[in-house]
Length: 444
Image (cartoon, rainbow, N blue to C red):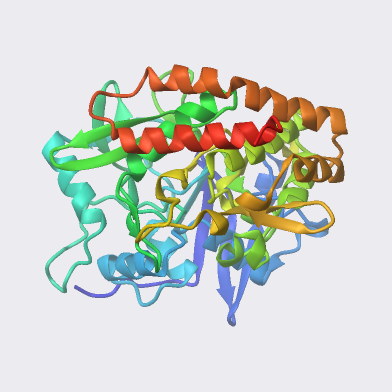
């Protein structure tokens, strides 16, 4: 099969409206907004890092590249597998999004120059039975050999993140492979398996993330709904996308504009962790200060940081927080997502993470930056809270609320565990939460 031909321009669309184009001119990437998009009541910048400019001057360089790069999977291994599947010449963001850009996170569609979205205001797709979904999930992690897999009429989408995943359309109780301009509505995440150089056992990541979502929700924080599903012998976490919504007339699915905090701050995804140069608590709180619901969003984000410490949720980097863009250049925080506890792998055994090494993705700052969970105490949360505008009393109230509600949350969520849920995972997470709650209460 011939390699995918690549032009130097991709047109950008949002729910059938032309937004602009992304092009490479003499090796420099440019984003150009159309004047019609600037004038439209739905018009808004794609990102806080890609604002409208005086005279509608093009945006150029790394800030453009980084925005689009953050739409793609983080893993180079996954990118290379995508390149092999679709016969692209390389793994640059432009090359990959030329074949994957029809269904991205948020509302953006990237199409070849001159092509327009078809079948926008309809719901089109091919019905999938359990066996077909199981094959698709198994195929997600398979690298095709030449001639073995012909990517014809298959699913072309781009989902950011480090985990193996795909996405499908669920409509009227049926699973479908979307066609035309119909978007996906649910993300299907596979178990992580053995992770990192230490080969930490995260084969129960699906159950772990489901449980963490239930815990976060029980504490009153908004989080993407999810459920555990089995398709033949394949297990997946099915996550409902909050960047999709059924139109009021019920005839089509609307894409909702959003971006993650790496995109919003113009940060390359490769440095998404604060220790590597990515945004931390202060930077995210500054962004949320411009939210249309700033007081609520800032409080929820700070509560989430303490809750991540309670859960030993070590992957709360900037790509795992997002904002939704609204008309009139307004924005609000989205629900939380991708919360996973390290409590089940913390220990002294083989393939386990020593408690002293478990670290948060964003530092808690007082006089110094504190990442290690075991070295963070209530006084550090108070100091960090003051840095971002909370009073001592407000931070103490947040900590007390989480500590006092921990047993209720454990009881409530524990009663929802499926019969086949791995109890060692639940027990490790619940025990870890209790230990951390005692520290918040000053009794540990």
